[in-house]
Image: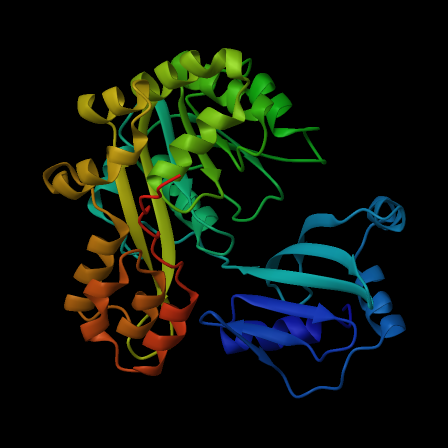
Length: 375
């Protein structure tokens, strides 16, 4: 058993989401969103080098020795599975281990809005699950793949970096391919997948123009494409896709989004009232004729008003979802306040009033109205 497994076992027993190891500080656990040190000495450079080298393959060691970061999955001797990133910093190396549950969570267990389940009924188009790092995008997509796997007879091809949840084929065939191990890039993975008779293609991250372009082609040619972006709202997601492609393809991209984008699910993880867990809260965009027109006429700044009025279609702004969760007492109002866009409506729910002045000081100052000058 590798020595590093002792830290990973401790983290798993404590129910943490991540284990952080870095030179110069003790090991740390991410517990319900907070980073907490464990009772251990500060890690020395040679010590951590030894821990990490024990779990790397020869090719990974050679790759890391050239100054590259590493992303891979690791199965601990204690049975836990982790997504790993190993990197270098000013004082030495560091590593982050993201714990991956042994069982794929269901959409019901994640308590996601019912419309997310209905998105799995589509046969063609693109669904984007977005949010910043660590907001559960991969977990949501894994739950969607599991739902498809259990309810439909499909060929599902999942392109990941690295493979996280492992799916056993049930009603569907699930093929999981890993970046760097089975495919050289996401774009090449999508290109290859289109020759493998897919019904559903999951793209772990739409990280560059080539990948976005290939994913768009797949969605337009009769496949259901699921993908992620590191964007924090529906509007920012649409703008990111448009801006990622060359200027000469701008009109084509807007047309694709208007016709083939099915939905954008943007999520954050908010602490539960007792502070012993976190819950996914989602902003939801469902494509409509009105939103399609706003995209084509480059008026995406008006999309939030469509989300606000689209509750009957399953749409909601993040703030609407947060307020509903506060009313249902499923999230901590103080933590919800930190994620709110328009914070004024949340102030009356905050119990730690010191947060109000802290976050208000960080807010941008309102614009100064122009004055008339007699030049």
